[in-house]
Image 1: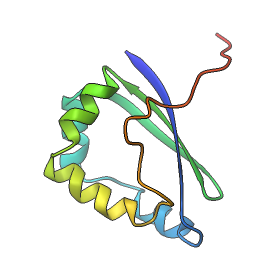
Image 2 (image 1 turned 90 degrees about the vertical axis):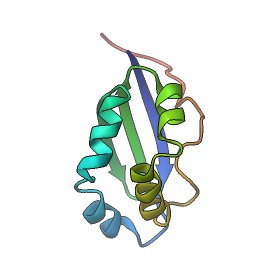
Image 3 (image 1 turned 60 degrees about the vertical axis):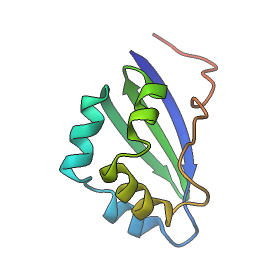
Length: 101
């Protein structure tokens, strides 16, 4: 299993709208994400900064599987209008610098 940290940024003024619209995701989207190896996905927000922590079997395979899925395309179109730039496009996540176990 992979554990990844991702970072995205909201457009100014979209904080409350993002929180409200992202409070739940479509059941079909969650189902297809789980089918493609997502164990959990958490998002924290600090002002305009979003921090995602993802536990997934294979992130690259998930991205490939989701690329053309209608549920994901609809969700990305809805959410990307609130972001300052598109959601992660293959970055592989933030570099892990330190971890205490």
